[in-house]
Image 1 (cartoon, rainbow, N blue to C red):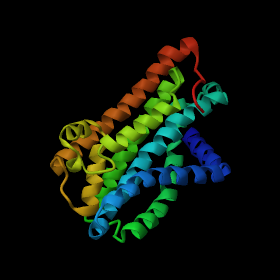
Image 2 (image 1 turned 60 degrees about the horizontal axis):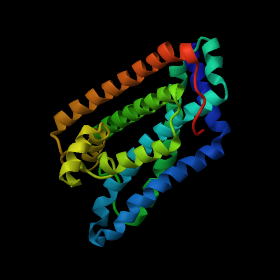
Image 3 (image 1 turned 180 degrees about the vertical axis):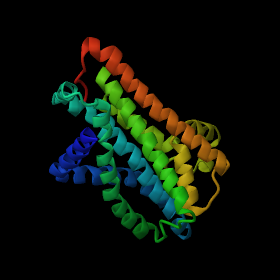
Length: 265
């Protein structure tokens, strides 16, 4: 318990000390994706704009959860290694997986910061209500599923960073691909034929579908009860993958070669 308190304190203190950089980064990322999504509104008839508000808002927020997890967890690992903190924590008999998982605090702070900004921006542009809240419980479940999946993805990238480093350009490309084809920005039903199958195969589409259902009441592409089951199965699978990947890298590789502090910081 004492190590957990120390980890929470570490990441909370670090986020506070770098607060201006944190605020700048969070808003920049949010606005970056907002430019792409809101730009598409130029082709939407004016009378339909209010109906698009919840889809746009939740698309931006959910993608921001994913993007923030990738960079604040997976991308941050290179910084962690470069400062020599890996060795320091191992000498202190502290789980590196727990330390890096603590970056979820930064991710949550990022979401808390960007949500009101996006709420104001989307409502002002569309003139619609962002949260219809047909079922807040489904919004909460979908958001939790997206958060845990994204954290698992970030931890898996972190484990790979310990082994070989993960180029920042690759993270940018994968994030953009998941936004467009992963059923995050738009409902799966709206995607062209073959893209629907691809979106269903990508884990992040399922919590996004559930959040959209909770916000608007529009049916999910897959029946809702099956959608929930698939989401939790994917969530458990990704958490287990991240855990065992971390264990494998630390037990099999790092004992022989040590961590690699390479790649983009």
